[in-house]
Image (cartoon, rainbow, N blue to C red; front, side, top):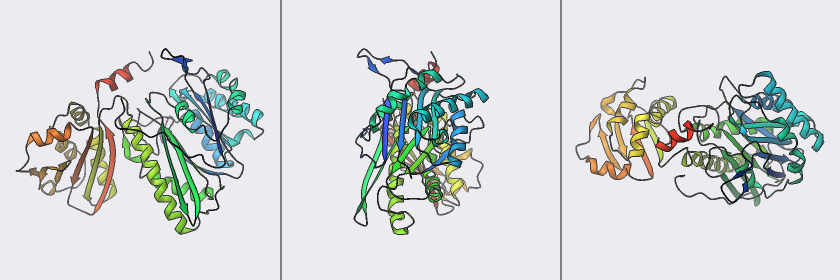
Length: 408
């Protein structure tokens, strides 16, 4: 059960069409209503679009990541071909050849060069990609391309997600309308070391690929690189940003760029937080803010120590106000901090003041905060002026069950 409500509205983006079909990579049907499980998605961009991407730093980067990075380095992307249910990771050279076969099959249908196709995969690691199921579905997929298929595409990239993640913005710059719409998937194996499991954000502004890459990296570090479910970085993490150039707004204009970055950051944080809200087995959405630090790395080291602690995460699940676990998590970090200056807050409740338990603290007050669905932990190190925030979830019985039964 995901934490909090989700909105599935979206604005189409000029120059973008999408399609989703059930190729049989996952089960053909689910539940008793025989609803098809979409597992193959195509995103098309009009010629002249610019694309930027950031990818996993996992040493076992999946075959589609290797192929996609190479293709993106030589050509602008015209198509993203995305399958769920199979990661095509740890498959060696044959995995790369399988990814290329899919790109070439789409090239034959669409008429673009094969290296204008970027492949993406998500699902079980170590299994060979079912190439025939994918290639035999491409004609149908191509025929279904439509600007309105955003939600179907968001569903088609899901694995253990319980709901699609979609976010959208429409705003004016110099009296011109600009649109940003994006989708993401991810629920477990989440502490991105660049982005998230999979995320695709598109916009209709004009932007060079060099500037687009710069903006993407900057905003990823404020969004997808600030979330964790279980401290694990996927082999397939990819986050893409594409600008079609259909709106007469050029991001080389600094005023326009400023407005755009603000909207893009808001959208990508919404998608990133959507992943945490739908984390495997999640019952709590937790914000960990560390402030008063000498630099950003100290903030992140302390915040992730709290966010990834199994003892903290199980305490969140149990609504247990055992605040000693917070202190433990702060104290185990190898940073130069004067503990006699540290203040800790649980919601609006002060737990620790100047390195010791706050005299006014009562466990009943802490328990009320821990019982809420959304929890905020704030740590002030009082040794600098830098702050940063990480979002995480609790660790429930359901998380263990989902991952124990993932392949059964």
